[in-house]
Length: 342
Ligand code: SF4
Image (cartoon, rainbow, N blue to C red; front, side, top):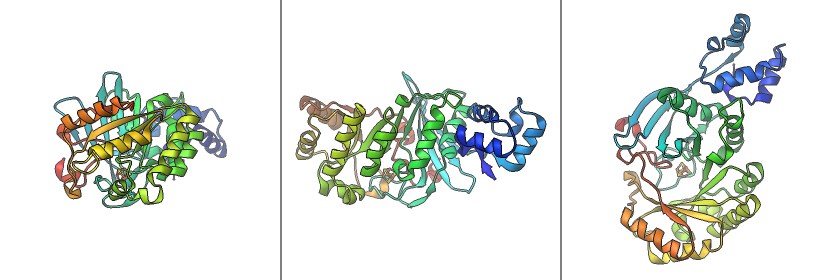
């Protein structure tokens, strides 16, 4: 059975034509899906016969909410969601002054092995389909009754390791008949897959790109992020520079501060030197301790001092607001063993 949530409007048009139906059904069904319909029965402007025929030939698999953890401080909610095959993923809903944002997962597990991240400790289970990525938004909109207008692909998984499904997902939520989310309100975060950064600059010029850098020194970065072996810092930063030149968009560098490792003066000076003149912004993250990793975060005061130091060197820098700190909901650091903690 084909899951219609995974299809673009064009693919839905082909599907309906193959069924001997009119092409315009595609937009009707697409729009129902993105208004949150979970069954063909809810699509009341389709004839009963068509609804029955659809339920025999296609499905609209939806994620199941397994657990929700709500912050008592700021409205952040962390969801543990169940996929049809029994795998689980996590998504985080956050409230900002400018609107509601969601951090979605792009894979079940991850094979990039970053040391500070518990999400990938079990390796990659599988890629999420475009529908499963989008369904995180639909499920959480339905649960909260809120509209989500900003999307960050920074949960479990390396989005560029699931590139085609990522692009399809972005195109679908951007569709007028989909969620009509502006491309400028979407951010994709990568650990640094250089060839895909080049492709992304061509395919998705208006989408924001964030890169997990965490150190400008190869040895230090490699000790935290194995991907650095394939794409060392200079190669990564060259691709980032080209990205900013081709898209005219500012790139965000994520920098999780690890005590005594990448927060020293030498490390920050190296960072400032390598980013000099680039259209970029550094987002400093006081690392949430990940028990399994043996790494400890710098505190917020140190993070603010480093931000001020970078600013003085001409590199725009901020310290990430710790949304959902009381429920350990920092994107990209979703923890292993969540089931016990929920
Ligand atoms: S930080 Fe991101 S890329 Fe690295 S292991 Fe975790 S989920 Fe994968």
